[in-house]
Structure formats: structure tokens, C-alpha cells
Amino acid sequence: QVQLVESGGGLVQAGGSLRLSCTISGRTFSRYATGWFRQAPGKEREFVAAISWGGSSTNYADSVMGRFTISRDNAKKTVYLQMNSLKPEDTAVYYCAADPSITRVPSLWGDWGQGTQVTVSS
Image (cartoon, rainbow, N blue to C red; front, side, top):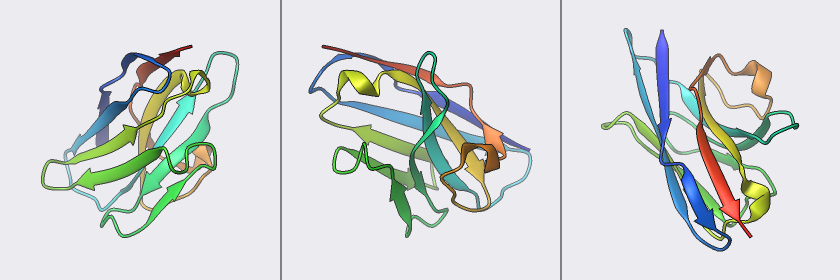
């Protein structure tokens, strides 16, 4: 019912910035919260950030607090993840997900995009 497509990934040097975008579409409109997750090779998927449908509530993993900012533009049906001061440890495939409510647990999110690769060189 909800489709999500990530974009904006790429290769960046440590200390640099990237902005990821997640476009949301579907046959019917729902007031979904949107989250960003990442998965590095050999590791499980982990929570990065999330935002409520109205944008009034945000949540960040401690590892990205102060460096990443999540935002959304419902008119454009897009959620963004601004990533600053990137570190090699941020290298992963980044996924966006949608669900009626915010949670840090990946398995509780219902709809997922296919991911975009972010690589941070040292």
C-alpha cells in the first residue's frame, strides 16, 4: 500500500555531508511516521532516526545525535536525512521505512524501501 524510494547516497570523505531523500507513494494516503535505518555488512539493521507524520516528534540514535537531522515535506511526500560530520562508521546501506507510529525496533516497521548506499572514506 505504501512504496518508499531512497536516493542521495554516495561516496563521501570523513567529515563531509550527504542528504538522503525518501519519496513516499501509494494507492491510498496514510499518516505514517517515517524512519531511517542502516545496515552495514555483517551487522544487523539499526535505527538511525524517525519523524512523526506531522513533524512534531523526532527521535535519533545516540550515535548520530547532533550530526544528523531528519525532516519531512509532506507536500512533496518526501522525508530527508541530512548527514553532517560523517564518519567511516556511518558506512552502510540506508533504508527508509513507514509505519503508523514511531519505534526504534526495525521489525515493527511495516513498509521499507530498497535502500541507498552511503560510503564514508577515512
